Length: 537
Image 1 (cartoon, rainbow, N blue to C red):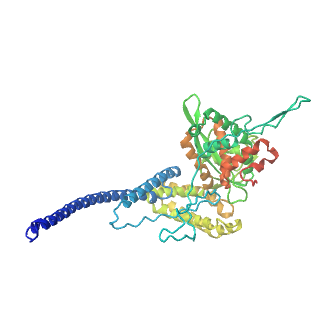
Image 2 (cartoon, rainbow, N blue to C red):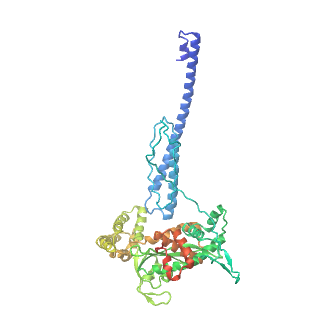
Image 3 (tube, helix red, strand yellow):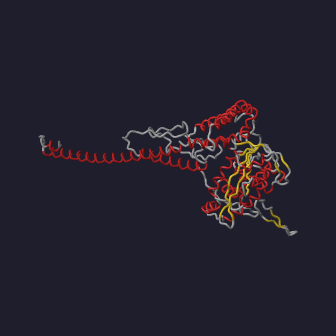
């Protein structure tokens, strides 16, 4: 019913009727306007609901591919790259959803905030700069009385200051003797690079950037240029070359130290090397030798850059060393385990090394088989191998004798049952099948695979050295190839020192800076005190 038409039926004075009619018309117009606003808001809310629904679906997809993956489904480097992308995308989508929900009108149903994981406390060793935020007034805004302090609310934010370039000015006053006309001045401070313009801090920044953060020199050149500092690549290359020579004795000493151990890990990884004149690269290898973490002494990783993968390179590095060597099934190591072997230089006969096989490699054969075909045989093998690793987890923090007892009492029976099961299963498996190949890999190396369980100080697998090599894979994606054999050897020297520092819980940059400061005047007889595991004040 039209309210204005109804108004004509009322017995009102003309003036009052006009006033009431105007009020009614205003209310009708306002209602129509409100209806349009509500309709617009409904349309906006509908659009946001559609957008939230789409983002929620996309978020579910990213979370599924992020969290549903199985172990070893991607190579480590691929997994790191993809995880970084997935985590970034998930956070971005979460933020978009939160913004859309925060824009909802106040009269809508409140949505609960997404629970967020608690963050880790910020390290205590970092310097703190306090910022106090006092109220604008010391009196109560309600009653005007004086405020009384009852506590503090403290929050912390992590900040960073990018690399900052500055200049050290060394001023050496010169004094003359009028009587004998001689001139006296303080000696020039010793430096690891004589006459160079780079202070130790800058040299450390260059080496850490190139070999630990895997930044090619041209990127370091660009970073410096943003601060107006011109560092040519040729200058940076000159510093790196000279530092490699200066640090060589430390790496040589680490190589000597690691060969004093009676059990080692060994592995190798290919490195493309530029082949001058051909415009192409050839394949060189970075060999790695790592100490055994289950034995006393500091942890050591030594890299040895060689032109190939032949077994003679391992024999050349090891020399007359003999002990337990943990390796994969690469044929190049086989000569080391022969009944007798020749010294690489004198050809005199040496004692053989004792082979320790990597159980992680044997497990990987069954894992790949299970991933490809969901094989029940592979699944059963993985379950049995998992029991062996459970014993290692239990024995991680016990003494050598206690670990040996656990292995003898638990691991050896598990290994015996696994061996019998593998043999029986192999008899029922078709030759040349993927299952047969996985089983044969373990059976052919069984003595070397099970040898660790008879001791308390030998490792179950070769994972420690593989983990130490893994950063090299990231570096290869950045610098692509080694420019020469000398460049590869220099990289091996510096990676040896920085890698050993990391293994022993040292800050590689702090250790390197301290070492470069001391190296010019340090006596060679005390060189062990500079190694990246010695205690220094």
